[in-house]
Length: 125
Image (tube, rainbow, N blue to C red; front, top):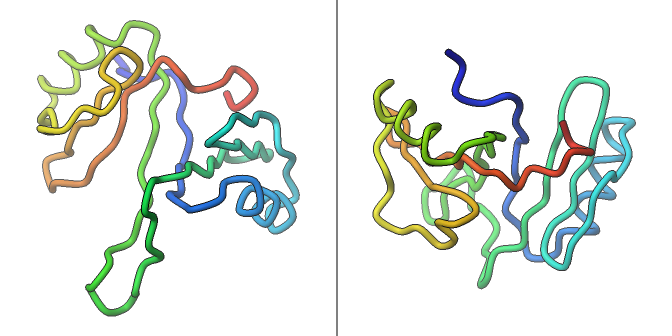
């Protein structure tokens, strides 16, 4: 059983709209969804979201001072069932859960964060 039905590659940022406009132009996509703190770009092959993060600092790559900020948002219909299945497959629930009624932050077996969410806009799927 697949846990998620689709997903979005999410980029943390300070200002979502300009970042989404950049990626829409780079990838030949269009902005299909916006909110106060997010924008979603849809292309023929990927959905990409720009998500505003409080006190955002850009990565200092290749130095490790501020790590890269990218993660997967995976669309699910039933959050509780998806979390249980992800944990069965080896994920662990992150200690910090900023919006547990809408999404759960989990860590893959290597420690990479990802979100299971009921909030991926239909336009992005």
